[in-house]
Image (cartoon, rainbow, N blue to C red; front, side):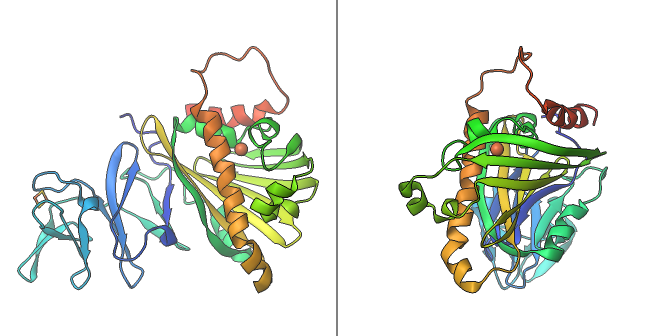
Length: 317
Ligand code: FES
Ligand SMILES: [Fe+2]
């Protein structure tokens, strides 16, 4: 496939998603990689195709003592640099390609082998300086191209349709939009109607969300959207991550951070917060997956320039 936005930094996983000594397969821009983390928390990533007879290394296993990955077909072992390991020694030259990764604040970034065109966004560091990590949720491979998925995050008219269920959003008002190159800030007021007791019982966090939510959003094109919101239990920063797996599928997940939260509140609400955020991805992905092929819109809504700003960055890349 033609690579999507070559040279963009992509956040392919958070360390907490990888497990320990477990091979994980990730797909970026049409290429498969195997990625694993050892007991020391070091992360390694290789091309997923075994250089012997092309078996998928991600179906293999990690040999803990030697920190190698064994191929599921003939059990040849490779270290994290792609060097063949045999009889207690390693070849000097790699025979399969490692994927260059940058690990920062437990987030694993890569340029997918392309010359970097943008730095790793500072936005992530800003969140980490002020908030504590709560967890990852909503990991999903969405049937839909990257552009359609990304544009949903910049669409300020879909909240009262797409997020009507559970979040009961009835209107969205944009109070500020400040684009600055690849970065942008938006302020929005969301109005909600009442949740039913059943909904609150199933997902307690919706019971404490205010009726008018004044959110701030910050964007680092193309990978990151951060939603800053205030709930009575804690300030929340949700980092929505997207990256192109193939031409037709897009990976999404949310990294959830909160400001100091009382341990009892954390115990009571952690799962509910993560579950509610995962619902957001579910709802957005349903919207994308059920669309008919795009045609020129015959109607325009307010604030669509925010969406077109992101589309322009994509098309002018
Ligand atoms: S295909 Fe991997 S060891 Fe043979
Ligand atoms: Fe959405």
